Image (cartoon, rainbow, N blue to C red; front, side, top):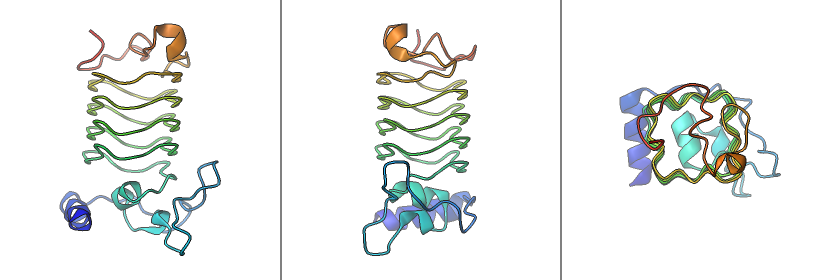
Length: 165
């Protein structure tokens, strides 16, 4: 069922961005998301398939308007990724690297971001309700733990749609 949804989502949204190389490897933890049998999710053909199947090397990924809710992206490298208007509700981005990513209009409801790095990340009109800011590097470079466990006043002047009232 999940594969069918991925195929339908990829076909219907015309998601692209797979360059056929350079995205395999590890995320700095020695893990590449492979299963030890030569099946490396970073070799899949679309960014969405890679993300849904455990690839952690997603720098520059084109994932706008995608459904990544409840997805485990723990430790993922999403630097300069386009996640605008993506559904990230209840996903886990703990220890992820999102420097320069675009999260404009993203639904980040109850997103887990412990230890994540959001330096220079755009969060204009994002839903930040229930985001678990813990030891998180905010877009302006400050640490959420030093900001009352939030990045709300440290978004480089942008205004989220919810969650920082």
